[in-house]
Image (tube, rainbow, N blue to C red; front, side, top):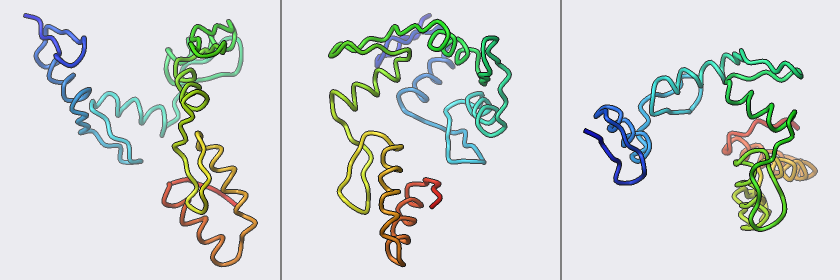
Length: 166
């Protein structure tokens, strides 16, 4: 017997795999919490991979062509294609730009073509599409020091869980 998901193209012969798929992908149930940060995962092996990669910083995969090290073989393959082979298979349909990663294409589309600005300064009306840009902008508020200026900036950064040093 084959179990077919009614919400996507997923198929499996296993009841437990089908239930796991529904709970993790569609119901977004995440029962496995990291004790070192706020991340939650739908499967224990995803949590274990997160701990090894992020908190323990274990990077067993090393590029033979440069100093790049990473935690997953897939990341090494992506690195090799993008950096050493200079492959850019993801092409924007709205302009001529090409990207080595689909995520970079998606980010480009959101920021350049859709003009989505998800990051906004809580101290003024500035909005931007990338967190790095917001952090640079907030640094400009550094000139507004004094008891309220610096305090306001630190309150905003703390609420965003951004670590920033003046």
